Length: 134
Image 1 (tube, rainbow, N blue to C red):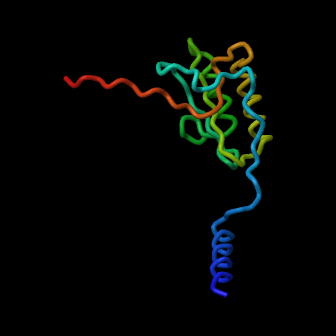
Image 2 (image 1 turned 135 degrees about the horizontal axis):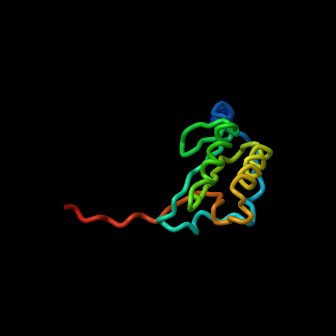
Image 3 (image 1 turned 30 degrees about the horizontal axis):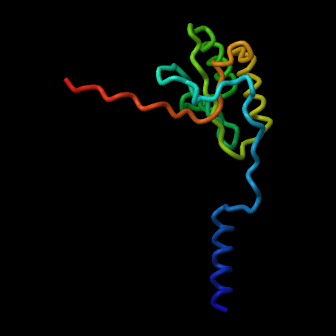
């Protein structure tokens, strides 16, 4: 009886905490003509575009709607050299939204021709060397 109570309590706790037995949905992998972020050198200039599980976009941590995202991508294209864009996504987001954003990035930044500009995944830069104190 005691074991049944503990098991029931654990199941109820899991249900109330938002746990689900449904597997997370993973969208298709990054586009083959995009560079992995780990190929970026530590000196690379880049912007981060993050999509959360609801499909909301964040440009370098600031929330942006689609119109602002469009303007930011077009402004980025005018730099020489073009800064790399690192797309980061949260598991469980709508795959249609991810594909729409990938299409927008591909079209505006011309990723097929500028493959090193477009990237998807976690950017983990090498640590900067320590500078001597003056």
